[in-house]
Image (tube, rainbow, N blue to C red; front, side, top):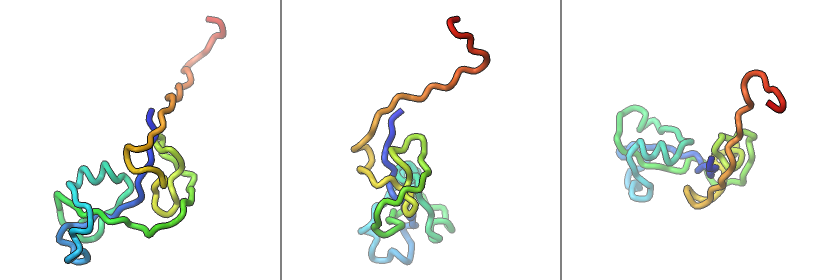
Length: 115
C-alpha cells in the first residue's frame, strides 16, 4: 500500500458563480470528475449544487492555519487529517509518498501450531 498526503478541503464553484465574477482566471478549473479525484475532501458551493455543471472552479475552503491533528486517518493517509481543513499538511500530490507493507489479515478459523 502506498500512503499519501491529502490536500486541504476545497470549494467547487460553477464557472458562472456570481461570487467569482471577474475573478475566474485566478482559480483552477477542471472537469468535476477530475476535481473529485484530486480533492477528495471537498464541498459544493450553492452555485454548483443547484445546476449540473461539467466543469468547476476550485477554491481553497479554509484560510491558512497550523496543522491540528484530528485522530482520523484514512487507510492510505500518511498521518491524521487536520481538524480544520481535512488535509494532512504535507507535500502536494504525488511528490511525497511512503510505501508500507500491507497488514496481513489474521487467519480465520482454528490455527494449529506446527501444522
